[in-house]
Image 1 (cartoon, rainbow, N blue to C red):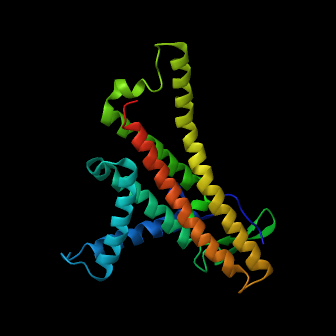
Image 2: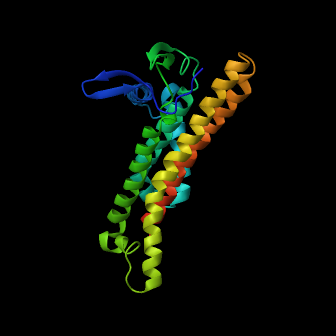
Image 3: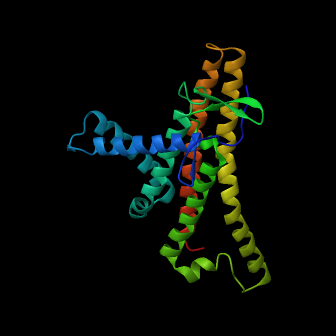
Length: 244
């Protein structure tokens, strides 16, 4: 058994290498698109079945975000991004726990060693995925802040020359914004990758029964990590659109 920190390459499209984590993220994206199309087809005033299920989730997330932002009009502006982040992250977290993900693959010869390469791997167990999610989140916060209060007022959060103390505080704010990318990406990556290793090791040592408690634990962790990522994004948006 070998645990790889980096996602393994399973194919290539032109100059673009296809990794097992990228493949699973594409599957999640396609599945969510199909789900959205099916759920929004033939909408009814009194929802039933799949439409009711999807609307319940969306309504719960909307109320959660609205409780943080505190303004329904503003919530409607930022909700699509926040909800997309939450749903994408949690689906990747949970699909990464499906039997076969990380365990079905091929054996390849690398550097004279026979190495097992899984066909699919949790997208959030790849630092590239969590980093780009963090970059999207942080950059979106800046754009929303500038759009809400104007470029001049927003830039004064970081570059204020009224006094040395305010200037120093502004630099700290700037460093804090940049460090969010690191904390966002490593928090999500670390928790999901650690859970993946835990399940792999337990399943290898004591198969079948022993991994079950850890499996349910990882379901909970996957939900919490998606909630934390999206709610922190919401809090940062609320801070960015408010004049200090």
